[in-house]
Image (cartoon, helix red, strand yellow):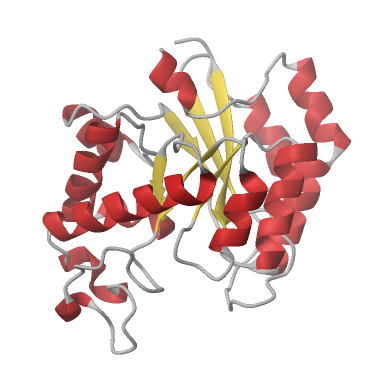
Length: 247
């Protein structure tokens, strides 16, 4: 496949401030795709505002209430939330049921199909999470984000489409600065589907997250006219994961 770039913003619906920033970056910036948390404080409002945009599911097994009514009580934390630190022990069947319930909720909220699946905090690094998610992805015919070669191979072995390359992180400092944007664009592989994972947003208003002010730096980067001009000079029009289902 020729060179393709997807710029995907995680955490749509996580918080009203984060939602506003992501929607701004989608509508007026370089971001071309986003993934929605369906069991977070701003999920319903975010979905209403995002209708018609390229939106996938940001599967959440880390915090918040489960969507599947049959989610086993033994796998919940003391406050009734999802598995949290024990997520790596979740049986694949439990992951499959919760992933399917979250996907169905996304489709109800958005009124449209998801473009793809990815996982909050990359928890599909755990084999049983990957297996449960893959079953849902295969049934729905949806691609899944891979973050490294091992995950890419595991998904493809299960008959699930995935990206060829992946760039992105969230840490103590903002990842997508203008300098890193320019460097990543210069290093963009000549072939295959590359995802740049990003976390643009305004300061969170409801949730507490370690990645807070960093989101505003990323938002400025993807809204900057220089970013869009650099993409145009490179003859790159960022797209979304439907490029893999149309292939």
